[in-house]
Image 1 (cartoon, rainbow, N blue to C red):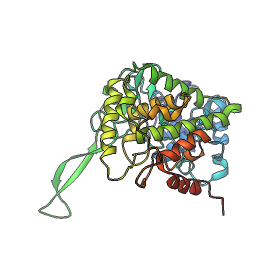
Image 2: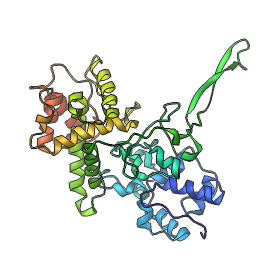
Image 3: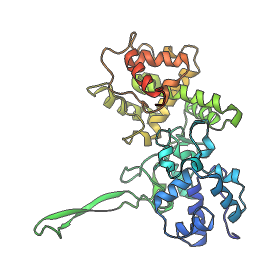
Image 4: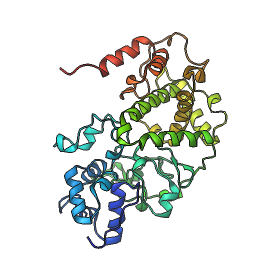
Length: 372
């Protein structure tokens, strides 16, 4: 392809497809076919999303034949670049799982499969996005030194770039009004329209908290760890994720005393809702808009980073941690769908103390259950 536009170093593959779509004046599917991603013909957003999350070695070879881009470079445009540190070495290659989709492969991984957090300034400047915006671990933009945002500034819905380029505006459907019903004369029915708001108009909140910057640098170092350090990086991320869960469960505003005001306000609203629930249930990373709010993730990682770099992790949250486990049964615990129970002994002990030995062992048995 003579006119192919090269991807940015950390760009997501679908962002690269969209950039070439605009440059060539083609549709997404035709551009994807021209780049070697898929066969020519009709395609769906989910097909493109699957390919851009996780491509096979054969697909990478086709991209090389069509564009000259080396397979190692094209693989780094997908979530495969974070294996094994963020995804684990036990996630099989897509070649081994056909016809299982990448959506199924990543269903239990700590990633945003359909949505992204984004930097409003990046969207405003060039409309391209980074592959690490698919990770909850990324909550700041190092280029513009601001927090990412996870929702549309107008409708407050999560942003799904698989539907159309970020420069096309928000693709969420919103209630537009009512009209006479065609199927039930004399009644009205609601109808929806595409939001279309410019994502670049979202407010970019500056990062002034040095602890948040240090926490993001710590995470980035683990995510970009070389292959021979993958196992150690994976364990460190598991430990950190365990402490994020504990921080979200027991953290208080006093643990964010020097944090940026926006982070404190967001965590304060979260804590108020958390403490008002009938059970001590912490909203995790699935099923709510909380995961798409990087301000909340920044608060959790900020506290957790302090814990994992402290000589005594439990002292960071003292005295809010229960001394002998909670007095009532925990209905759920943040990130209980993940492998946080595989944390190192010192952090596993703190997790047992936080949720109660019985609840911890019940989840541990489920996670570590041998294959039948």
